[in-house]
Figure (spheres, rainbow, N blue to C red):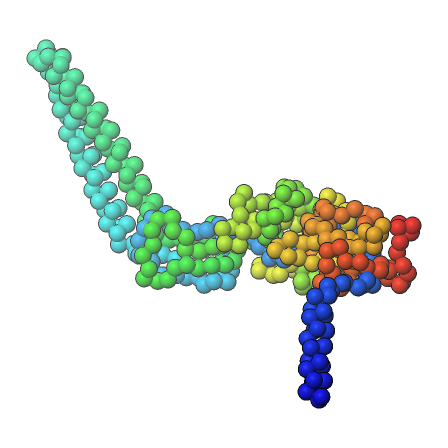
Length: 364
């Protein structure tokens, strides 16, 4: 008898287990907090920037050669016409001597052909030579004149090259980069220094490629230096790169400041604030936005059926508390602002506002 009861108990357990597995799981009504998108007349984005000089020429020797001396370091302040580096003058000195010798040879040749032409002129006057002989001598004289002018021009170029062996600063400023050492052989035009010219300062920053179409030259912006918090300087976008950086996929931009900023040091951190009425008209709390497969979405409550619908949205740059919504929402939509990761498509909900008041279609 006890064995029979044990068998019945096992069979009952199996039947109940099977029934529980086959019973479909239903989602209960979940209370959710909802809110409508915030209306924003202007969206503001902030970008990290750096104070730079308006003019930053790359300095290079105009001739090639071996560097014998580097007279400045990175960060050195220089004056206009100050010597920055020097090349070995031996090669340019030898070239100068060769040009001087060519000028002397051209002058001697000119004296010879001049004397020859004068002699043929006298013979022609006495009708002792033909006109063609005199013309040939005269052409030799003109050729000698041309050779002398060529040699003199090459001598002047050689004299200039002796000066090119010294690299001088074109303006007063600060050396921000030095790419040469004594003993190094450099080519003509190879960058050896970068000079930040004294005077006007600008702020450089990078723009993500997905919002580059929102920026135009001359667009007004505000700049805040980290050394001067809560003090906004006005400026405008002066320069936009025509192509994105291949590594960062961002566009370089520069802001020209309207105010004279004496406290702005090169390399100092700054923030560029850009406001544009067209960036976004609606904004939602950060907690309302979720993402999947690089697509942002929010949960919208259908008040008629009290169910949630997932809706894809296009967002702007996130702020500390809100997310601008460029497209995908209407101002009268009710969105879930808390617990969005727990919801499923079509799930029944009980919508309440921040004051715990029910939200119904009649209230909408």
